[in-house]
Length: 147
Picture 1 (cartoon, rainbow, N blue to C red):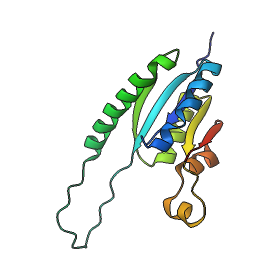
Picture 2: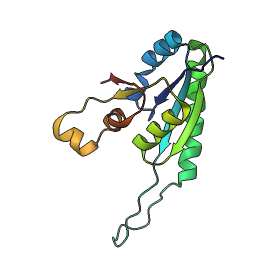
Picture 3: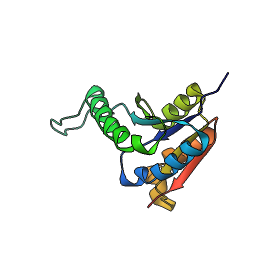
């Protein structure tokens, strides 16, 4: 019986996150891994009691639909660089939890993701999805520093 290696690549489509693709391609080739590109849609937070006026807040379904289209374009773009066409998945929830859960359920060999390299107060204010994944993932995480 052969086992299937899976490599999870979370992206937010930023230039920084896409810089990690070179690592994804190399590691997938070395491991003979199938690449799973994921985008996480976080549920919108609604604020009540404030006089903010009418604001157009896209629905989770609209965001997920747009993310699927972007993931499809990305998988088409990198398919020629991989031995197998990557899988594209949109997840809904809190990004670090969804990424870790997806990788665990898949039995992923590793997660490869970019880190924006924020330090000090900026990191505290912005948070770090990569750091949260690193702390609790059940598989190795490759954190690619990007600028």
